[in-house]
Length: 133
Image 1 (cartoon, one colour):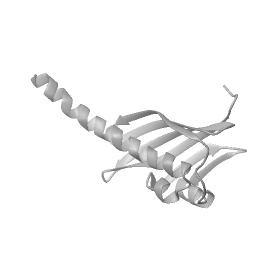
Image 2 (cartoon, helix red, strand yellow; image 1 turned 30 degrees about the horizontal axis):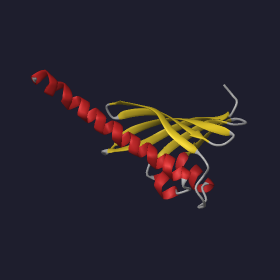
Image 3 (tube, helix red, strand yellow; image 1 turned 45 degrees about the vertical axis):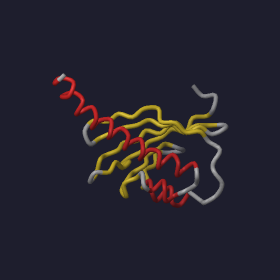
Image 4 (tube, one colour; image 1 turned 180 degrees about the vertical axis):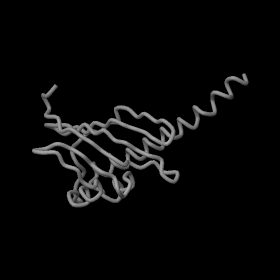
């Protein structure tokens, strides 16, 4: 029984951080789905960087990008899911899928636990056309 109690302590802390990372990711997903920048903003550190390749490689401040592009309006027609979350100490990574009718975004997030709060510090993504493998 002592062995069980010893093992349960670290697992509980890990489970708690997993849930907190999930909560942060849901701020991002729910804020985007609902065109609600104030909710989405809760997910990101102020200096979070977003990197992607469109016609060329781009690197932008994530919050500035979303603030410029996000306009209040009706809920977006999309499905979201967290594919996985990995947590090690105060660092975490996650893969998300955001599915629209004709394409999907595959997001890879890196998070850090900063002053007790999990924040996305970097994001890379790929825009996948519906029939693409």
